Image 1 (cartoon, rainbow, N blue to C red):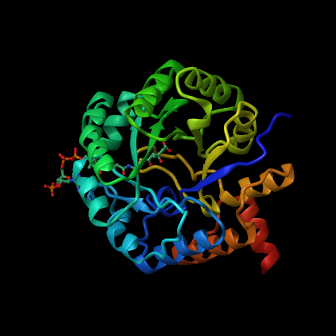
Image 2: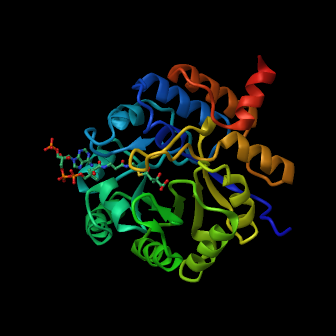
Length: 301
Ligand SMILES: CC(C)(COP(=O)([O-])OP(=O)([O-])OC[C@H]1O[C@@H](n2cnc3c(N)ncnc32)[C@H](O)[C@@H]1OP(=O)([O-])[O-])[C@@H](O)C(=O)NCCC(=O)NCCSC(=O)C[C@@](C)(O)CC(=O)[O-]
């Protein structure tokens, strides 16, 4: 097997994990979660979004979260920014990294951000300009890289085209999102290879949701194709407000357990992540979705 020796995880639980939860989560609980995930050894923790509070109410307190977290040197705390207005919020909150997001399918892009794919890039232009001015790093997301909940199957060539636009625009990394978690390993490899023909492989990350239980198999398949950055969510929290039925991101604990078994370096303490997961699940009044988190919870009881 040709796996990377080292993998970098981007913990997206505080943003992707929480954005779909109906119960409002306090600033204090979000700050405690982000600080605990940082202390667990993560080098990137996505901390929130500067989007419309009418569209995604759960992210409305991101400015206060950014003001209160203990920012550890060397750790990235990206926030989602869809447009200039969101960028103004990120600048005011002294964010050092943002993530811009679009999709490979027109229907999802419109449902998610109320604009076409081309229009999303028009919105990004002033955002990138401001990011350069303020010395902020910019990550890019492409949603619906396998299928769209409205338009069906998505062509790998379209994913490659959108990814290349983000990369050429100045994103240091492009994260490829199987938003609804429908992909299987063979489809994911085909998609990754198509994108890697236009964007260097080492600039790509994979963002899998576990709706159909394929995410660990997909991670193994794309690791063999040279992908070494994965977005994961503590306790397997998550879903997308604009993709009905999509379940959580692949659980951080599940991925750490897999990587530990393969002897792949990652720098994150699985028990500390699991404790952070139990705390936020208690706050939400729900059980962890991640299988490994469930097993560790039973062991700890
Ligand atoms: C993109 C917009 C803002 C366009 O929304 P819009 O309605 O088209 O924007 P608008 O410019 O016409 O403005 C309308 C109202 O929104 C306000 N507004 C406008 N922009 C902002 C802003 N930045 N922050 C706060 N407020 C904003 C603006 O001030 C105005 O307020 P009003 O006058 O009605 O009171 C909206 O569609 C939106 O917020 N969508 C939510 C997008 C989102 O957060 N989706 C979930 C994250 S993406 C995801 O989960 C996928 C990913 C990344 O994880 C990968 C994967 O799995 O696929």
